[in-house]
Length: 355
Ligand code: GTQ
Ligand code: FE2
Image (cartoon, rainbow, N blue to C red; front, side, top):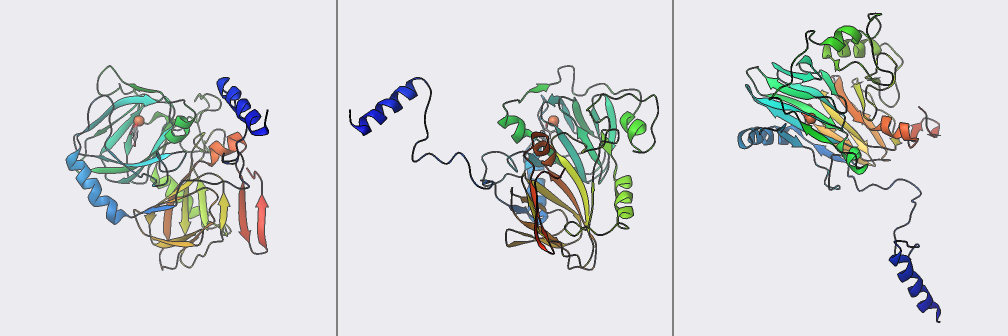
């Protein structure tokens, strides 16, 4: 048999038994460095706000646990803001209820505008105010009800691209009414675990699970102010990560959340890492350089940074810039896939996993 015929016969036999060998036009199994279809994208608040208002007029919140959200859709991906998470802006009008449901995806909310809306997570009711971070861990029941007077706007992030790629998506609407019953102690987890340094000796928590569901703004802002007294971080200026107060480490298993301040005149060095990131501008103006391109940003803007892209942040203005940062580093670290490189004064400092 000629060589070509033998190869063709082998290929056919392999296919018959659901096997294959590497074909010349197959994409390579490995690349030297991560390659991502995700794009680095900037969303501007001036574009988002009018769209949100239109979405508010056009879309009613249905039953069965539906939400009204504007998703930040990455143009390079079929699904997600990044390949691991969806970031969306939820818009809820006075009197509305986003009915109870639960899902495998871990989620959190970071409140951007408004007051008077509360969320209940596994029976614990939390008021939501600007700057608060509220967690909805995997499979926790949650519903939101707006008793305030103005539209309420918050950032939702779910690790749904990740759970989807792992084929682990479950969703369950609550079937005993619009809202779940509320427990006797409002804001229980915050009262029991929220100070971070003092807690009741009788407060119980399950190992490996962060018992704290809410990180209100006043304490976070105060911590960030206190951190200004530390030595300046050459890459991030002032940066704090939201922590599991009982066991340390990130507040969620898959998603990292940070609060960052870039003071006037700060010019950060570049760094790159595996995994993706979303910056949400809370206050002030500045710009980021990502793989050589400049992105100018101001309050309400969102910048998604693709994996392994060099990025550095700058503040040329005369006021502080404050950013809320989301990444998927905890998920990558848990799997041993986290790597980063820093541009240092002396040149490049390469670190493997520097957890
Ligand atoms: O508020 O529960 O943006 O389930 C996407 C899915 C928000 C929520 C989103 C959700 C929610
Ligand atoms: Fe949800």
